[in-house]
Image 1 (cartoon, rainbow, N blue to C red):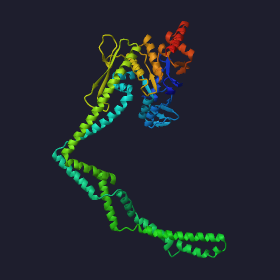
Image 2: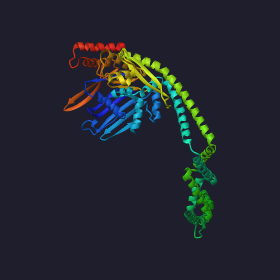
Image 3: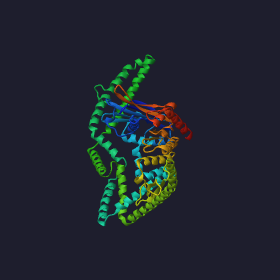
Image 4: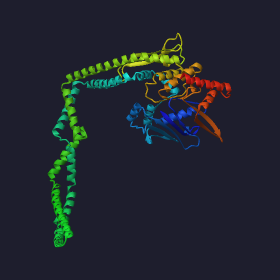
Length: 558
């Protein structure tokens, strides 16, 4: 859930900090106080569009910081799939806003906007007037049904996705297999040449690496042998005083001293051991020098072999293993081309099998969707009646698409009639903005225990409603708040009265500077704010009593 919000230098906000709670969080305030700015700042932190005009006048930068608790196992798994790992169950999202650019971070690490939006979609679901418009697009209706019945539908969709990939693969193979006899013979000729060229080369695994190492050794042999020869002169060959000769002299000179005491004897033994080691070194150095002795013929053969392999690598792969793998693929293709009629027949048979398998999964998914839609529609209809759509009729119609897809063969759309005697029509054709917000609320209530997103934000949820309908909306909001965190901006006292946590947003002007402030209200302060919503500028004792009674009734009813 969203635990903490910190905003600095954004529009009318100088700096505010808000600690949200579990359940239903309500934000109220006068028109123009900055309610939408606060939720807009949340949207900014989650990757919303930004321009420099959003900064507070005179500020060099703005900052929005959100702290989420991420303890639900399904949420954590989704985050980990994006390589995002909560620290001690916490996730800090921040966005620093500067003129012309912004920097986003998650737990202190800079991320691009794509990652930020992916993470946001897991943690929070924002519903403003624009989001309600999603119901106008029927492609979203089927997705909502799938969420409702996800326990059964998700595994079926995974099976369809696999079957669809196989079907597309077989279909593509059939489409690409068509060729005339001339083209077939031409490809046979080319394929035979490629296979023959590779086979005649007689490649060994890792031969290219071995030859490259040997070739480098050959080309550097002169420089290496000069250094080895000079070293050998200093250690053994030179009669003018090499290291071996000098050590022998030292041993003879020190021999008498070694008989003096134990210390002398120990030093003498060390000197003898050094001489022995040097002799071993000289023998190994001599053998090492011989390893750089290459004939011109050896060099020529190595160079030609390496050129051949590099020629094949340029044509068929970046390594010997890739060349051999390419050769195997071409041999299989050659067999197909030589037995072309059977090959085509086999492709077509495979396509039929894949289509049959895909059809089986698609039909099973359609049946499950049809079955789930009955209870889904029933629950939504009841939810709409609870929201004062008294004579509503609601349906979901599922039709078969003409083509297969990775989502099955279903095309789903909501139909609704809100008035007696009216025919059911597509939802997008008849619902107003206010009705869409209530319909979305009814759907979200039905899906409250199905969706994984831990936090829901509602803005403009009370557009065009009042009276009994407002009370019904409040009840639904609280139902959702029982299982998920809900943050809602409202101007209706019926909704505000049901809050688990009530926040007041105010605009203050001091010394020609206007600032937006937010504070969490206590019990009595909440009653006073409800009275303001009920009575406007002039709040009387009777209005305060009504506000207190409204809050008390809300507690009893929820």
